[in-house]
Length: 374
Image 1 (cartoon, rainbow, N blue to C red):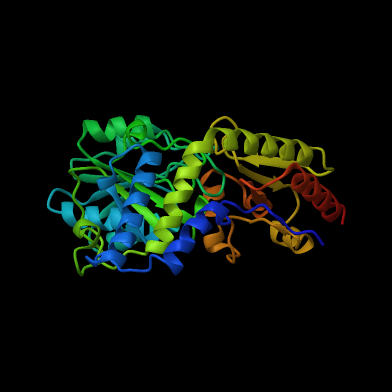
Image 2 (cartoon, helix red, strand yellow; image 1 turned 90 degrees about the vertical axis):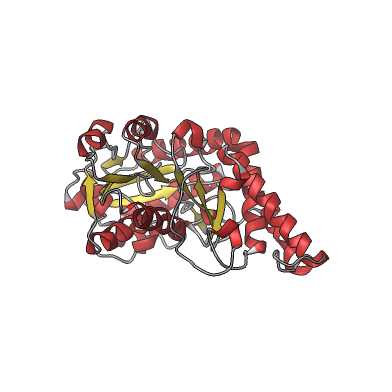
């Protein structure tokens, strides 16, 4: 039975060249990057080289890059760190109903601490209206946190327009860009953000490593206290091995992003056409004009997606976000988009990536066709 991986939004494999870069920091340059001797210097140089590689992909200064343990920590640091530091100015935060739990849970935590959070609705495509953001702003608003691209349906949010609102009212603006970095352009100046989250395992780097971009001049209350690592912003000896892998992955994605995105989008469109030819009614979930090039979220009418997954064990796909894949509740994202429960229960997310081939797609279509006939 040929196994086919179509769950790149859950996690990507580590790029072979990123893995190779990591090896020398496992076996050779093993020193503590804070040590002043030769072993520490090699490790320190590796961290700083990776910092430059990440900064180049995001179009920012290396000094604006803080390494974290992943997307969840970066989101918590941005949201809770901003709230803690700015609570003397106000207590109001604006977000959306379709954010990742790593954004929603910190917001819910802050509500218990006396903060007010506005959870904005989205339209049937999963897009938030900039006008709704504008209307939600209050004198007490201190932070806007809206994802760049949705992890389940791939819809890209109008960050540039929202950033203009944030600038007008002098509000800090954070985006969770875990799903977009490496797939589409994420230059921080073009997006207009003050804070941006990166998750390594979404762009061919290892799990357990991430980044929070913090615009120069923006202050946050650190979550982790200790020694003065990361210029005093994130205590703890740097994870040199994984940082090196993330840096290399960012370098590779920056160099080949346009070519890879075009190839992956063509494969995704070919896959979608193939699905539409199967003898079952389907519905495309998301924004067909403004979405990630690799993401395809489809509802199969009259079919429970969990039951369908049982019939296609050789296909690695998801019925929603992998972070809450075992839930028996319909996707909160799809429900927020106005879908009926039965439509949401019939949804499967297919997400393609760098190593997906046309042969994979053809095999996947054959597997789906066979399962749907049953």
